[in-house]
Length: 210
View 1 (cartoon, rainbow, N blue to C red):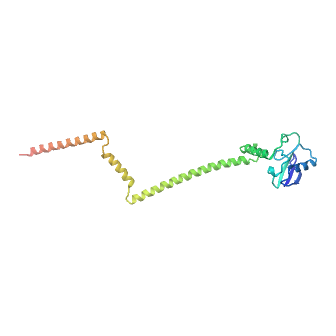
View 2: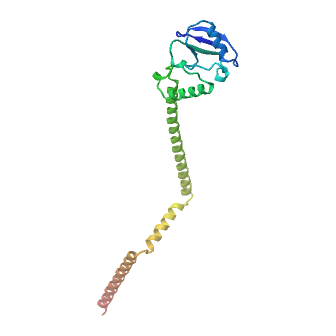
View 3: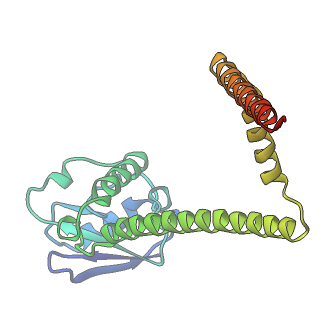
C-alpha cells in the first residue's frame, strides 16, 4: 500500500510503499527519520498503536492517508488498539448518522440525504400498498357483481328469494302476543262484517216476500 502523510496544509510530505502485514512502527520510523516537527501521527483522527499491523486496523487500500499533528492535541494522548479503533469508528458513525450536513465532519450530508431518501421510500411504499389493497377489493366486488348479473340473466335469484322467504315467514307467523292479539282483532272484525251482511240479506229477503 502507498502510505501518504499529510501536513496541516493537506500537503503530502511523505509517500512510502509498505506491506499490509507490516507493523505501523515501520512507517513511524520513516516519519521520525524525516526530521519533521510533529507531536504524533493520526489516522482518521486516531493515534494508532505502532505494535499492530496495517491489516489489523483494516488499512488495506491501495492508498492510505495519515495526518501530522503539531503541538498539544488530545488525539495524541491515547493509543488505540485495533479493537478500540473499530469501536470508536462505529460510535462516530452512529453520532453522525442523523446529523444535518452542516454538522457532519466533512459536511457532504451523505448520511442526512440517505435518511431523507429512506423516509420518502417508506412513504411511497405505504401508498403503493394501500393502492394495491384498494385495487384488489374493487376487483373482488366487480367479480361479485358479474356473478350476480349472470344469475339474474339465467333466472336464478338465490339471494332475493332467501330474503323474501324469511320476510314472508316473519309476516305470516305470529311470534309474539301482540301479533296474536292483532290477528284476533282482525278475525273478530271480519266475523262482525259477515254478520252484518247476513242481516242485510235477510231484511232484503223479507221485504221482497209477498
